[in-house]
Image 1 (cartoon, rainbow over the protein chains, first blue to last red):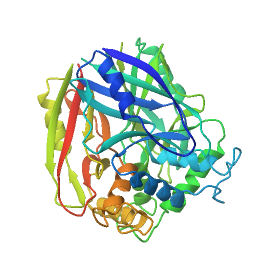
Image 2 (tube, one colour):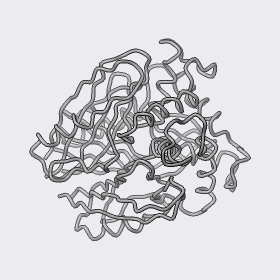
Image 3 (cartoon, rainbow over the protein chains, first blue to last red):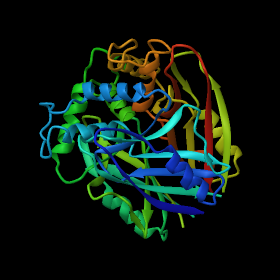
Image 4 (cartoon, rainbow over the protein chains, first blue to last red):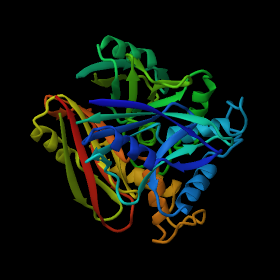
Length: 138
Length: 138
Length: 138
């Protein structure tokens, strides 16, 4: 059995948003018990991560790490049409994930205690981001 | 229902190749309507990315970014048996994806407007690269 | 059909462990022939990679690469509660994979000749790491 839905998230510019509860709600409402949740972002400048969910400085540090690794306005880049955060956003997307594939059982995601699902907006300004959630199993 | 096929791509040395149409053709020919396409590369020095599909400088910039991050002939590396691009190719593969998992509906991949599927050859010379495409759904 | 199992691996501190045979055994014991194996790590400081399986210096070099890219005790980080390897372990996890999705056929993983599945412990000390293996197919 397959259940497929769209989820739209409005971001407020660069940063992470915890979407674990949104996904768990879709799993518990699906009527499925055991299977895999595929979470897919339809963009090339926003991505998904599984990350420590308790201390927000983990995500601040990740942001700082990425800013050092792939700074906005890097003179290396030629693709600058949409501003200094354009190409760095593409690189950050490539280095993280466009889809996550997470097992569930008893209609709950089988995440570890400290794992949260985060949508990571890589552009400076907020966007409406579209995700496809596909659940398959029994 | 599961449909599994092999796809072989001849690369012309380091660089990206858009394989979106190849995958969409397999999806539309599969007889499946809704599900997930798993695209898997059977190599450790070539990988997959979902990337901006309109402006080719995005991929030139990605190549430049990787060349700075993990240069060929890096004195850090001991695994140099097959030349200066050997270990850098392994690192680039690890930092990107060996498999992509993309939802489809109405027998079409649910990609965003700007998303393309690219095979990324990380070795200097061309190779024959083997991919396994597994489609599952209804 | 879906078969889901837990696999626990005791690590001996930072480094990689080849778990290919463990996963292949679960596939061959599952009764399934064709499908996808989802391997999921329930932690935010250990991850999975598909990596060259013949020459161990590939993994030594990967370790050296990560130590240069995201060194322990990096003054950039604020999340240092559990020691100098805490935040670097989270970054390494984000840059690699929390899940792998590998096709199988005739009850064998369709890995390339040089591909091995490795669990990568990113903390200095050993831990008990829990993985969920979900196999689905025919």
